[in-house]
Image (cartoon, rainbow, N blue to C red):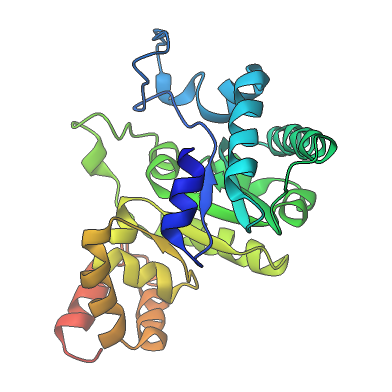
Length: 259
């Protein structure tokens, strides 16, 4: 069983599993490919899972059994509104209860989270943040929806910048709202593995970044040599200056050797 092998390899480290996240740029060869005019905003991820609850229940059952009594995190992708998270969690609760009824060993601790990949979820009711055990900001999708620029389209993908003042202000808003409810928040996406972008995210309060293994060294090097409090001051000053992006000010500060 793959979940069990993954958890065995992780040892004492807690593992977060994302439920089936297909559609848009993620296609499975054994599933019928449905032609959609805009697949990034179509039938994908949690939308598919909620319409095919049998498939999601099988995956959730495999995850619970793979935990074999150990702690586990389960995360639902592409949540756009509170009802989707509530419905998905209800399905998980049903699977947990069924496993209990069958006498199977349950995880010693189960935390349930969501990926925040759509701007709408940042404005969800307070109850969502209270119910959600953790949130992962899905930066790749969130950026394309925030800027209305398809990340698969080379003609427009370069038009948006993570260090744009508007986008950073939005990330700051999400972080503050999570902090208000004590909901742990992390950032997942290509930008987490880029040293300059990672520095900004951490300076703005994010403490968990998901990245490829090759990016860990450069990002650690950047964070360890930089005064995060000073970096935050530079970011805030640039945000208040009327500049479109904080990148020029941050690069000038870093090149000045004051970090």
